[in-house]
Image 1 (cartoon, rainbow, N blue to C red):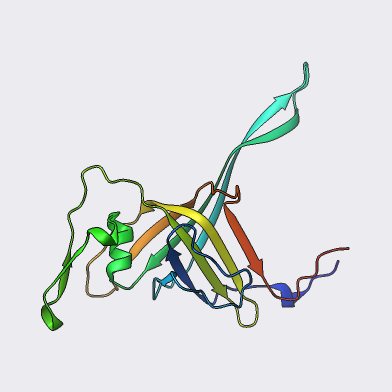
Image 2 (tube, rainbow, N blue to C red):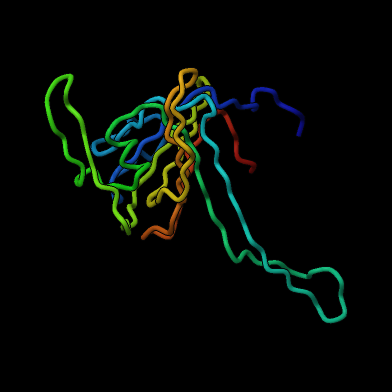
Length: 191
């Protein structure tokens, strides 16, 4: 196989969506996200970071110094994104508050939302959708069940936007699949 520069990808832009667990997701990288999926809006220029962490158990044979086999004992997918829009969805994800527990008051320029931060918050689970766009070569990642498991600091200063850095962990879903990837880009599978 020779080198092929048409297969080099860049995450030029993208979008991140959340929905209630069980919401029907598209099954290709082109179909628009359907009812129930919420676009989290602008994201920071850091883009999306996908991590796959694995722990392995090594098995050695009697008298041997090298393993004869390994087995995965833990596998975790995480997706980190910084959202730039301050809206009910990004705020609820960051503070771990169900939108149903938020209160909207006032009207027009004096409208605001408020919430009580729970002392012992219940876990909130979401379906997670991510699009990574490189011209005509989209990639879509769908996670059936995810939870926000890490958050960055919110910085309030004049020379940068307020952002909500969120890390989602893909959890075991009813189907047994944690994440599905859809790619297009003239990638032929070997015969």
